Image (cartoon, rainbow, N blue to C red):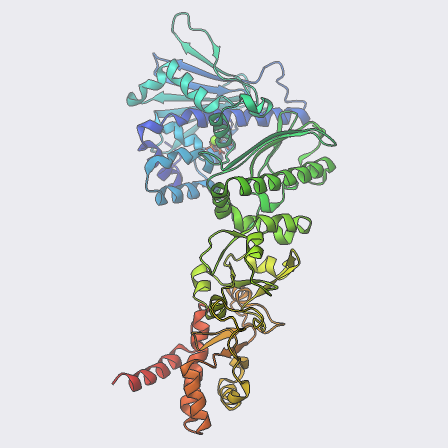
Length: 622
Ligand code: ADP
Ligand code: MG
């Protein structure tokens, strides 16, 4: 073989060749899927390019079984490939999906995941599961040369000139000895019915060299979304979604509607049960497929749904857009805008319905896609309220999945605000000293641990006239909210004045590491915590900025100390007796650094921290 496979491609071939017998049938699905895509492309091209006109030739996919030669040929009259396409698509150049597929296979414990191959854009290689060698003969529409690609799936591939009358592709599989089952027409027919019934083009099967064998169309051959929902089985939906690359298995939600009115369109959408591997790709693009009157136009029409719904997969078909519109112009097309508006409303309404009807299912959706949906909270002001209603949170109270409405219902007497705590992880949030007073008063605090939370919270303002208030930001007054165990209105606030000299001493020793030092009304168990000043950035937002820009230092914080903690009481006593300022300074440093650590940060000066810490330890451990 003249051309070697690119290294990662070789690894994929290794995986498919060694995959389980029971899954090998999917090669038929993958090859039919490619044939159908190729016909879609040609159909679109022939709309604009008059030199490409094959209307005399009805679009179809053919399967020939040749028992004598022990081969299967799957052919289409689609777009075809030229020499360069062949090289790029079937061998040398690493495509983005290749690595993602390998990563997925590495992570999965079961080998069964080879079924996912199509989702990663490497489905063609599935043909090597059943073949000793594969020959692809192809001619690109509008070109005169035909090409043949040959490979045994191990040593690389050859490309040579060939001849072919019409444009399209023919994939010839020389079937392995242990895969002879696929030379039986009933077996092939069964697999086509199972996976490819929804394909819009006829799939025809014929057995060569067999007496009385007739060509037979073995699929339904009409686009699935054009059929009435009541006639469609769940498995057919599932297969359709896997064909269009929307993931495998049962979708969490399926939406099949026909809308008529100021704008008419059909949508067949799903929310996949597993996250697409490129969900957090920075380009954040939707990939809904747009059809105009059954003709596939593009999957790059971002205007169809906003980025925060990019996890919704599927197709939209409309007659209200001119077939001749160029793909570039679609972005600003008023009909697309109308469809988008209607579609987004529909998806959000369905999600809300589901959240009321089937909490468990909704929870799964939220766990997979919640952080993506939240992007809408600052990108789509018009629907902020509807989106907030869909949001779910965990809390300091052990809730895993509480809505804002439920939060409001659980609010204490005189509680005016919706409290939240931001942190990089949920565990970190839950161990924060800031939560202590809320725990003692039985007030719920929402945990915000998705990076995205910082962005929408800084703009969210209110929900149902209640402010979102960060408990690590500014000064909180919870005096009005009574704790569950004392009915008289809470503990007496300690007299701040008693601590003035201690605070002055600590301010001097900590210097500009802190913005201010004050007595806390929040702490019950811990001696200290750090608070962002009112006008400054909230703690978690600042961490986020620091991750992005290592130069960014952030603003100094306010150190709050707990007047009832034994350590603070002792330090205060030392001050009153005018004894040992050095000891107070050292303790102050430890108070400050441990407050930082509770936010997941390292001490400013780890060496100094360890030194002071050890000198304290020496005194107590002897
Ligand atoms: P995917 O279909 O997801 O892109 P595949 O591995 O199945 O991944 O196919 C790789 C590429 O090879 C396709 O994107 C296409 O460009 C090309 N290809 C495969 N089969 C055909 C065909 N029958 N006609 C034209 N191009 C094809
Ligand atoms: Mg494919």
